[in-house]
Length: 221
Length: 52
Length: 241
Image (tube, rainbow over all chains, first blue to last red; front, side):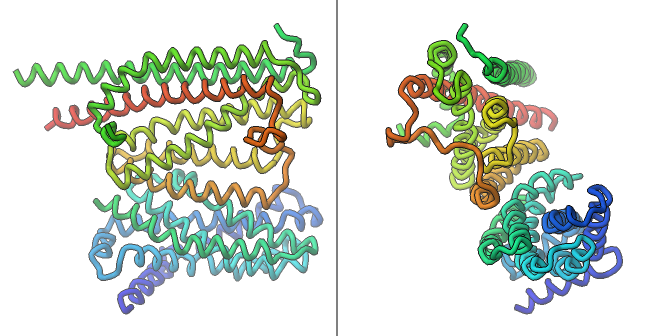
């Protein structure tokens, strides 16, 4: 337990210190949601209809952006070998690193999303389902991303490949998460898509650490 | 030639695309098979000569 | 003889070498019979007219696209559990064939959709799922290509194939939730009332058999090539030292 806490604190400290890149995901999220209306046009009626989808796509891309460093820095400086020898099982290491990634990348997006939704004229009833959807959906993005990052950790310039591998895996989360906000905006009940978003996340939390740990062990061989 | 009527374009393009796709797939497969087989044969004779 | 003995590369090379000529002839004959029958020998359908002839190339391609991915799932699992090289290499050899079949299913569907639905593409669950399936094939092929060490590549791509299979299935249901589509339901089932007419059924079955035999022939050739490429690589590496 102490080892787990130490690892989590280390990850957070590394992300939050200068050059750690914790704020970059949030900045990227802001930029995507700024340039989207510039591309689509300023008509608020149209923007309010596409707002849930835009916010979710921006969240997906922002999560993706910081994934390639998730294990790579640790592989390069050898700390991954040390972590592999630590009392923590590799699955726990992966889960903690993905959790730290979510705390520094996913969680800020959840906080920023309602503010940015104002600029996109998101329909009033859609706010709460969108925030809840992001809150329970973004952990899946970090954990699925950890699998992709573990698969591509040994590849130089693996960033593009990582996107190709991870984005298709994000599809179920994207669909259910965005549908919750879209349905609520139309006055429908968002409970079903929200429950399904949560189901995908729970499923991913259970499965992804094992797949990512297997991939890391293969890469450390 | 069967009477295809207004669907002539759709049917003929579909068959053309399929035949071309399958032909390219077979061609690439056989071409790479031959190349690898030749390279392997060459490497094996080289090895044998070195060991003699 | 048990199936596992085929995992011995030497035995696999010997047997597949003997099977291949027969397989090529069978595949060519079946495919030619099915396609010629389908194209020249079938009547027009009541609602879709002559466009129904696309059925004989659309349905087999779509079936192969899905079944090849399922095969890759199984062979990846076999590689991870039993470490048979032929299994891993067969998955690698199958992927480009599966990707081609996915593209062919999408393209023939587009040509069919244009006159029948009035649009070549619709964000229908089935079409969208095939698009997603194609991305899974692409990612799998790209990961193989990116990793130098062949055993590591086999391991990592197998993990990706397993994870990808699960998420491909999830996406299928998610996409169903996202949109109800134009695409008709499956026309091939054992329940004969919902089935298509015999005049289309028989040539379609022959075409499906033809596509399957063609895939088998391509798979054997490609797997043999992968085995030889591995041996070549090993020779080259031993030659350097």
